Image 1 (tube, helix red, strand yellow):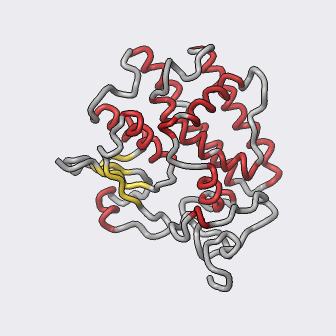
Image 2 (cartoon, helix red, strand yellow):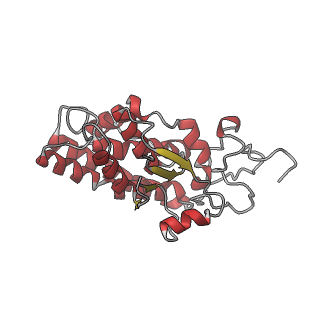
Image 3 (cartoon, one colour):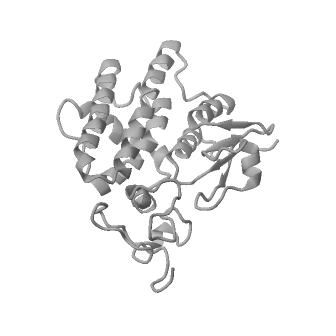
Length: 269
């Protein structure tokens, strides 16, 4: 029987959710991952499968059916793969984790709007917006497991959903100097975030990788789009990110060239 296939971007947080699930279940080889280069036009064969949509990841089941949206794919794999599901099996507890998962969309959106912002005067408002969402998460965790580390007794479905976003927000630490304040408004969510990011099943990406690949996001150009004056996206596969220098932190005052980013050799472009 053929394996399910996931078409994805390796650094994509929505794909990392699936990788975390597989790692937790010890089933890393149960799904075939096929890499898509978002700096190039989509393969017509893939577009035919997705009926023209370009959002990733996309899962093709063993029977050739297509599933979209990472949370849908995550829940499908959690149910379809062998072994105990990651989701809570108690109906009430599953409802609680689903309520927490429902908060991920606005949280993710706030972080991406923040990093892509190009108006320095908006930084304070965007920072406050994200901190407000962290306080909301803090309150939720206090309500349902005040003395614990995770939402319940162990890393679960909600953690698999949020952890990739916590790691992507390394780009806010680097490009915006974002920090969670100390104090009771943030202590519980800070504990949760730290434990999620330190979990052995979540090491698919590194801070250096995120900072380098998401440089163009910090300049307002997402999903492989080119920044004005540049010829190579920071999401390009070559040169490998490990071989590139760290980008400048000052996203508002400095716009690095392809050469300065290590994307092309000096004198080429």
